[in-house]
Length: 367
Image (cartoon, rainbow, N blue to C red; front, side):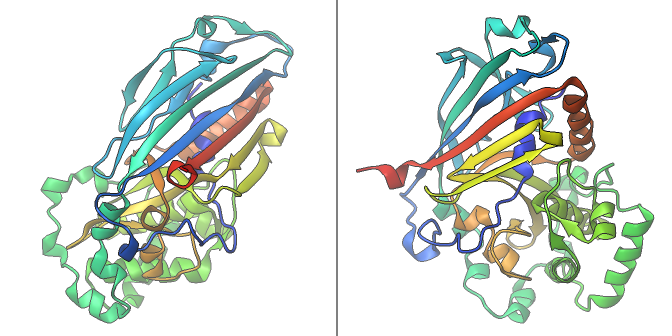
């Protein structure tokens, strides 16, 4: 069984009216010396609701997503525990993702019918919001989209050999050879007048804004399903944008992470026929797109946070306005299919998950 269980929750966007408040950071009130310290806790109980014993090492309930160390965030402290006792851990890399594996003797034991186990991890991560905002400062300060397109780079400014072909490749998730995707690409080719990378992205965003309605689902939808249903949550819409961007040879990938919203924020939901119960406190999981737009290079585009359209999907991206911890960058994996398979498995084996994701901004709690 894959460790998909603990990052599935990351793909459920938080869309609550009025969330923009004291948690939003502007370019004018952030200095380069400031670092925002965010605490993240994953914890909860896993129960064997079936009639047969389950080996714990086959469930990967000791495996958690591990935040990335990047130029704008670094991990300060980590703790892991099982049944209330702290245990050592190791961090391993799987493709582009890092995961934490708790080193507990429980790993080699089993859960009998009706038995539960309590697991959890805690990460403290420092985020440099100034550096993130500075990277797109002229986008944030420009309200005239036409002028912004004029100062943006051209196709010759994209060095594909340096960036890597993996960021424009067809994958099973981002399959722009799908007949339905190809029809949409043909339509966009006829309706987008400008030919710069930024104008292409804005044209794609305009189509998504006008045709896709926000709706969550576990497991995630594939891009062609988003078009057919006219529905999609954060990662569903992001995956459609990535598929279309790659069809135009614009490098892009999916980033996932944890967004701090505010101390009073709470969101609770049940999925997978009642076997997957999760609660978000203080913030929640989110997915967004990193797209290569010269001269700014990797720009974050957020389809669902906030109410902006067009260039507002960049200006209002959670990555730039909320303390957001990046957990993973997905370049080629088809996690949508993996999630669907995992959902079927936990239902068939009757494994009950009661999970909590708690997010704290320690800068706001300091006395």
